[in-house]
Image 1 (cartoon, rainbow, N blue to C red):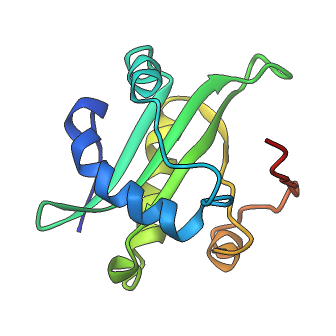
Image 2: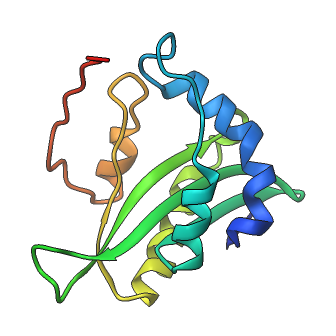
Length: 149
């Protein structure tokens, strides 16, 4: 397994099929909201250094990704915060600590950027809380969602 940071331009096409699987597995309101990424916004964020993409590849095939936004914190401008936009490892690659190693790799790369805090959200119906707890992440918030459209 290879863990690496990748360019948005190099990984975009490889992410698309995994994103479909991810959406099918974890998205809410699938009957009302269809997957429709704003690729232009991702490209702009990447070009401006805000978006970071860390991947896991097995024999060249993409098996997992973490997409992270990295920005100074508006509440504490001396700290850079990283927020996970998307995290996914295909079910076939979840054994052997792939998710753990991918997160650890992202932590190392983010620390090199001067990031103080890395936030990762988990879905209630697709949890990986035990992994987060084993990795010393703290449960800090609960988020509620309601489709009102």
